[in-house]
Length: 279
Image (cartoon, rainbow, N blue to C red; front, side, top):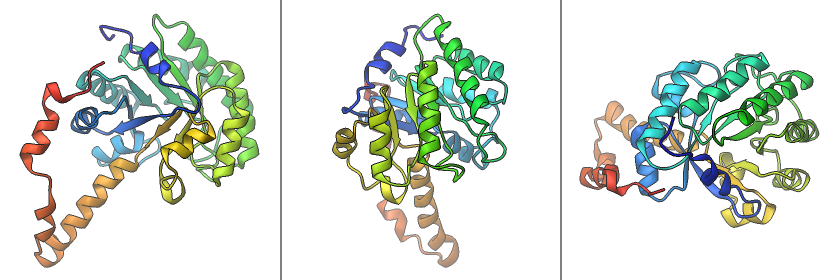
């Protein structure tokens, strides 16, 4: 349990039309660098964390691994941290509720639960999806401190259902008491605008992919978005740099790309304890 309750400050960041950026970190080093660069809050990324373990995304990291990783990020900086906990690491509503309780014990300021039935990309049946979020909300309200619960409808991103079904689910999740609603990567910006219009509570948008990386923070604000997360995009950006730098080395013996690497002293400066943002 953290020495202070990070929940209220984290909750206060969620303002419709004034979105903050949830900077998703994938290890202690990236968490410290993002904090030093001025991030207001951090998120874990299930896929980014999986990549550090040499695993693919979607259901390959255990709950114990995810919780330990989240606790490491909580300890790394003074910033509030939200946990990306996939489907809650189990199908049953009771399992999801227990995951929420464990998220609180790990010191997290928030966590997200999605409606995907791992290891497939298929969504849970509507009624079960709602019951799972209802159980998560009940567990959240019974906690000894504040925790922001995000309910996710991932079927558009997973190509399983359309915007109408996503909204049906988001509205049902909202009605159960979820604090923030999230349907990653709607097909059009107008669809995201529709979500923000029809959902009363804060909406998270994902800045990833060819469409939504071209939308500015001000444009997200104008739509009514409250929170902009990066998902695994920043982690994948770093991995793309590894590929682009290593390929010419390993294929042609060309080391020239390394000349553009950040100087070690500059990186070390960002990792110093006094460089992190203060709460």
